[in-house]
Image 1 (tube, rainbow, N blue to C red):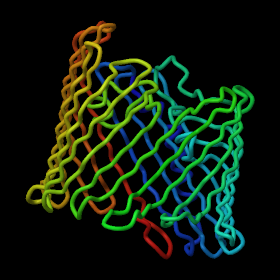
Image 2: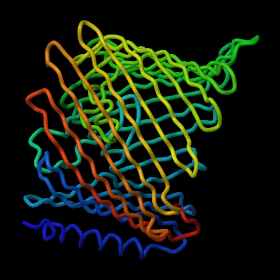
Image 3: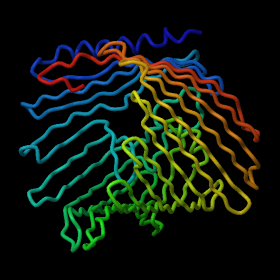
Image 4: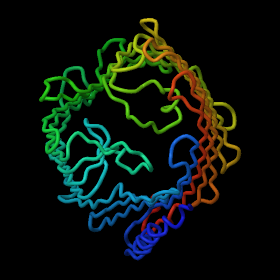
Length: 428
């Protein structure tokens, strides 16, 4: 059954919003895009599906008013869906020192990246303190409808969320531009819990012949269990003009669904909560070649854990070509995992970009046995005109060694039309 009839109601709604947007006052600035996506997948249902995306951003400076919209309509052979990912209005007051946003919008904070249906207020005080207060219903980015999936993909920690945070520049001996932030979030109606978060960033100058050290740290404390839920602390310093040394310690949970080719295959093993300690070195050999290496220790909720090594290389070739390489090995307790990733980009002309990616993984675990993964991807991005872009992708993957292994073929097309910007500025 064709999926096109299922798209017609959504497309009519999209056309109505588009025409209404064109009727806005000419003195206001409006930009956006229309994007059509088609994907065919041999392994995951629904197989073939088609989506239409609309993005609109509006700004009227004489009234300090802006709004934004992001939505999509889609259909497969068996169902259709419609999602509203973003729709908010924002006003600025008190000479732009206070901004209030209401509707559905994205947030990035100590809780991660999520959407919030509610209100967010930000205030820059004369003392230099930045205040932020928000309340609403949270949702994960995975709440977007995934066709023919039975699992609950919209599973935030609670039904509602309220929080407040502040940050300010602090004066510390030996530090330059140090900023401290503190916050509190209360989850209620579902998982009632108070979580505290904090952060610090700054540059420490030890003096003498020592180079400055850039430092960043953040953590989230769960007061219900009395433990640190996540943390990330890192420090880096330049040894000379072309080399850098860095240290990092973190505890985090990667997203269940990966977005990029590297996430899905090169970092195939990185699932579940894990703690990572890393020490690395990066050097720019000349204007074209940068290489680096890191030693790491990983403790995981599941999967291979132990100590390992990662090497990386970025090589700028002639005529805008780019070659990237990544290799890693991790082992411990008679288990190991090894991976290799290679990526190549080449502009075929001023409007056409070719990208080729490949990855190999090998895993050996006493609990799960052995598994090998081999994958490749080819992408073409074509700027047809200044306003019209076409992108195509073909991906092949093969997994062997376990019951859930598979062969997969994915093909995708994206056609993006940048709407002619109206107003004083072209925001493209």
